Image (cartoon, rainbow, N blue to C red; front, side, top):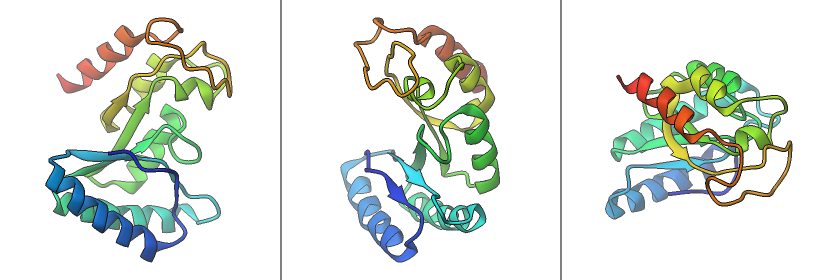
Length: 160
């Protein structure tokens, strides 16, 4: 299940929404969510504490929450690894979006970014790109520069 960008500045609204969505997702047989969460002006420690509460809530429904490859928490492997290690919740991980790594970063390689945070990957959004910074063109798979085999190899190494 995918949700739209969610700021981490209103705990009551976020927890209420996630409680309702989790119950619905569980009834549908979903395994988890990938969501775009933004700390914005919220201090990271406050945002992380709230995300731990969300993690508890989704875990109570047998679900996981994967943070999308978006600013300002998980736009690359370094930030995903650091922020998810700080959140430190077993139900919260990274939704690795193979094209967004290029969209939000310059001079990167998705295989290297995947390697940096492979332990946190809970879901994968296989999407291709010509590789340009802030380029919104996402062509069909195989028509861009994403090394899908390389990403798969990194994730397979992690599972082994």
